[in-house]
Image 1 (cartoon, rainbow, N blue to C red):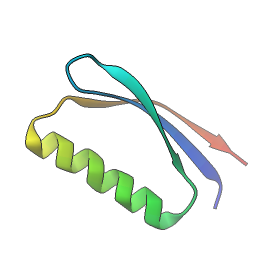
Image 2: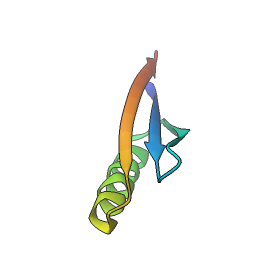
Image 3: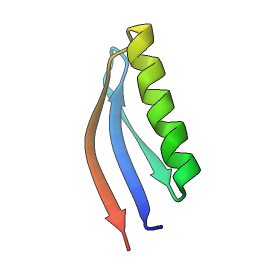
Length: 53
């Protein structure tokens, strides 16, 4: 699997963070993290994604 880097903004101060995804399990964990934050009402937005081959 290619390595995917996702930049996202979270919280009131909209600080940008990166999450490196190198496996299918990490992709599932990140998607669960995003949906959990949305369910809690926390602002979270995916800004951009890079794929390193």
